[in-house]
Structure formats: structure tokens, C-alpha cells
Image 1 (tube, rainbow, N blue to C red):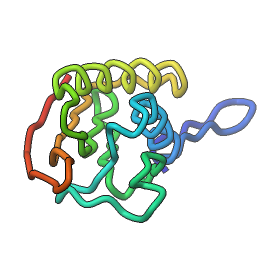
Image 2 (image 1 turned 45 degrees about the vertical axis):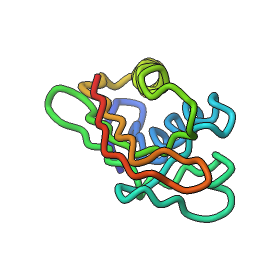
Image 3 (image 1 turned 180 degrees about the vertical axis):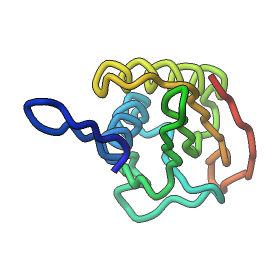
Image 4 (image 1 turned 180 degrees about the horizontal axis):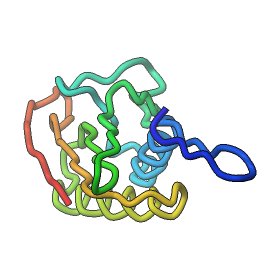
Length: 129
């Protein structure tokens, strides 16, 4: 459970899976050129390799005093702009999370763990917004 508030008419709760789905949808917009990975650059399973994974165990989603702090890891296919991908992911995840959950987003960090061509070239590039 990420967030829970008791209201007069009942309780409102938001699970980490909600934010995980928002991140997965943002990654899907790149048509398989971006993959969600773990901190070591590994992608789990066949579904993840085609860009449809939303495994929140690979994502760090925490609610602090100033809002949500989100960190997730990605692999990018060779020939795709790291700058364009990370900026667009940060913008999309922040905007959609605030719209859907109503929670303030303090920071979004995208960590590029590698570039994929025939083999994966390891990287450790963190872009924060």
C-alpha cells in the first residue's frame, strides 16, 4: 500500500501497482525501443523483452513529505536517443501520476542500465527530473 486516507464516506487507497502501470504505459509509447529492467540491466521473461512488463519489484516508489519519489531502470535499443527518451519518460510519468493519483510527484529518476544491440552494453546513466 502506497497511500491511504480515511474520508467521511470511506477510505481512499492507492497501491504501488497503479504507479507501476503508469510507468509501463509510458515505456510502451516507444514501441519496444525501451525496456523496463532491474538495477543490473536484466529483463525478466518474454513479455518484458517485447516491452510489456510492469513488474513493480524493479521500481522504487516511495511517498515522502514532499510527494512521491519514483526511480525505475530501463534498457534502450541502440540508435535511440537517451536524452529524448529519458526526458519524455520523466515528463509523462510525472504528469500522468499526478493526474491519475492526485498525489504530488517530488522526483522521477530514470536510470539507463544499458544499450541493447546484438549484445547489451552496460551503462549507468541516471537522469532525474
